[in-house]
Length: 119
Length: 303
Image 1 (cartoon, rainbow over the protein chains, first blue to last red):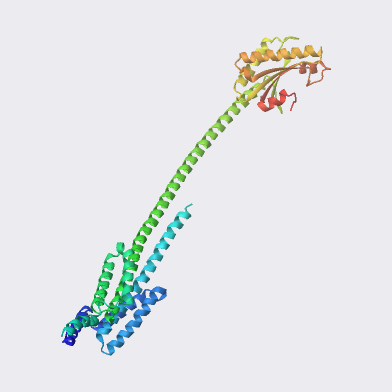
Image 2 (cartoon, chains in turn red, yellow; image 1 turned 45 degrees about the vertical axis):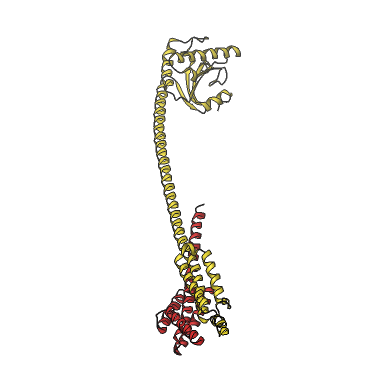
């Protein structure tokens, strides 16, 4: 009776997790994750040390997920893909922020140069 | 049976591990990352991303509550940490974008200000230049006018002096224009009294002198021949110069322009040994001088 109770509970939990894991099929989700990684690479994430670290983690995890998909372990693959996607997004925003910050510094320096040039 | 009832909850607790197993390192990291996100610019500039991070953390916490230490908990906690980091960086990114917009506006405002300042300076410089040009043009016109007036006056004076040549000897010397009048036709012999004929000649002289420039002075110098005592001759020559001066002043020549000097028998122009020579030496010289020439004359030097 105890065993049956635990099994039922575990099954319920698995279904719940599966439901929360999203409705995308693993291969489609893998394609989305690849797109996120490519987007980050396209804006130069590999040249930013912090961003490059997250991009590498994303790539590694994508590879791991693709391996899981090939072994028909879709549920596990989805979890890994979520992690890969999260890393790709962090890599993207770190790169964007670095560029925005540099732009602000440049504009402020240009304004100061205008001011100094007028003295 | 009793033992079963006692063991059941304990087993359940062991199976689910909700009280005995602590959070995974991933969950601890996720919680820390969320706290950092909350304290960062994310709260102001990316609240939606912060909310998303919170929701991800809640999912991880639920997984921990349901199945502590599971792969699911670890995976969800990992994602939650990343979402918190994403929110933090996004907050900074949004702030950067706003700062950039402000910086660009400040730059544009500075450019506009400098441009306006430059235009204003150029306009003022142009005004100053135009005013200076006007002043220069006016000064040129004035100068031209003065030159014309001066030329006219000089012409007039020259004409007046030229007309005197009929009644007197006129010479240009270093000390000025010298009009020499014969003493015999001016004065009663041995006296400083003017003859009637002298007045006619002096009237003509007065007419010429009245047109002279303001900067000209007239020195009236009386001379005698060498007969008689030096002091007598000196006094006579002075008296005669005074008489001519007074007469010219009475005819309208400005008194302040005239000065009378007695030279006595000094600087003869002819020999005192002959009657003709002595007659020539008995004379009055009317010297028209500039102020510089007059100063040299007063010092006793004859330029």
